[in-house]
Image 1 (cartoon, rainbow, N blue to C red):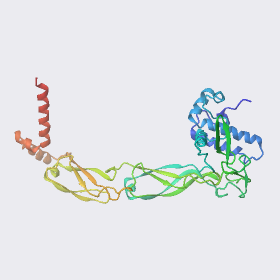
Image 2: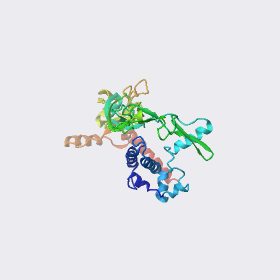
Image 3: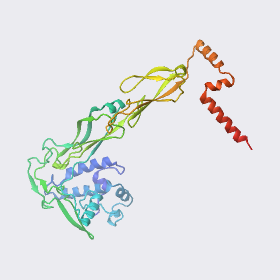
Length: 376
């Protein structure tokens, strides 16, 4: 009998995304799961058909081959295996079983834990430096409240007939003897006699979970925080996965962070740079005084010790580096323009060179360049 198209089995379009495939498989599996349809051979066949379709379409390489050649690809080995409804979750399980048996490792016993969940948290620089506690909401598979995650309506379990309670099955594939978790009981060795009506024996339901996440002081962009046991609930009583919170620090309007150090630009007037001044500059702890010596040039870097960041990995805070930028005045009044013109008139002849060290160095460099270019 010819096989049905895998996309038709899952009820999705041929351009369905990975997430759409996952949701479709979950609906199909829950509908035809043997635990929900005991003794129903038709439902068991449909369950295997859904599983086979998802195993192929959820694998990018297998899906590409299937889209080109259909079922024939796997009947003649073009797809590299899979699609036969053997009961394993993915190719990684097979290779793990093969090498485990060769080197004596064996397959992992017991049911699999729930999947890990990732969450990206955006913080301001102030929040990242000081630390903060934030409430987040994550869509996930959470433990069923009705059956407390057991999947059973009355708590009764029966020995799995497929694995005889061992939680594993062994089969021969060519020269290799392979062992894997039992596909019928999920590696638990027991099956649910009376499935929970709320979660249909899965022990978990889809919901949005609200959590309070404490961000330690000093985290930086790219840091990751692990919350053990806050990921997806495991199937029918198996351990949950973990939640990983990835920190993203937004760009700050004043400071740039470099590890434990902070950098900022401080604009000053020409008169302040030439005559010297004491100005107030911002830090994360409040304004502090910075003394600008007379004849300070634009680009001069000043270091304020211990005014940076104390990261989660350091014992002492870093430093704040302030780069002075001499600002050209704008919107001049007639009086200011007259004063500047008279001031500029004082820079006459070679004597002006001693007042402009950078300009003098630049002009000497230009002269030397042209001399080298025009020399024979």
